[in-house]
Image 1 (cartoon, rainbow, N blue to C red):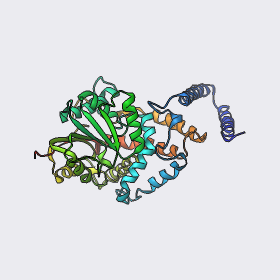
Image 2: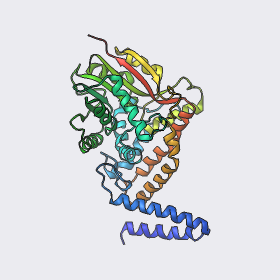
Image 3: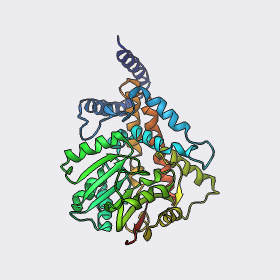
Image 4: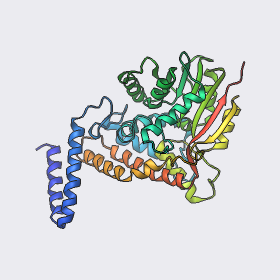
Length: 381
């Protein structure tokens, strides 16, 4: 009997023992849940990862399966236990962000989608429509049109860039530090028929492989928050933009309601930072100042989380997904038990499940926003 058969037999015997202790009603509920989970696992084992990974196809991205557990431990250890500190050694931030996205990219695609960001929920619109509107706002703000070249700073697997390129007709180049995301993004660009307008390269957005004054516009969607210092990425964006061009950023920042002397506020922010690969949390004023410091003119500063009186909260999707998160974690834990998922990926998923509640807390208390929109202009030459 091999290891998987042994584990499966032990699991079956334990489950049978517990099932016999249940009432008739509880057995019926367990049968429905168990049947659903079994069907889900069967379908995931048989599915094709090309457009979306299934639960059984979750990996550690660029990290080998054997190294996932240790890499996650090293990532966890990089954060200080002292309140409000974040990543202890900021010189390791770029490396840690690369590791973070190798660990979470498959999970994000599986459980969230190809656009790794939040969106205000528009009235009578579903999640996908609200998401697309949030992305298309950038194309409109930048004034993108056919023949123009735009830069996506920290593009992930390219969900937003495909929307922006498709709606504007502009050529969009994305940059990400993570090679696994580069490969996924370019595959998806081609699979969805937008590769003529969208391409992704690997690179550090603190030292981008582009000529100065080469882009007609640039944007970042919940990405520059990963920079060890915000002004360092802003100065690179400033360099590659043509004079007179605009840069739009949706920033993760603390709001005016955040109180650094409130232990609960600090705890929420520390949890958000750890669960999302952030070195620290900046204020919206610090983000504004970072842009002005490198030479940008601040055109607009607006928190899109609160700017509309009719849009639903950005964190509603997390609240609505609490059962799904728990169910998915049971699936990942089972795959871990069966040695199908890499060892340690269960812990990565648990981190994401936990931080979802921290994000909801940050949104409910209005001490945090993932979508403070900053519009900067590079002065005319």
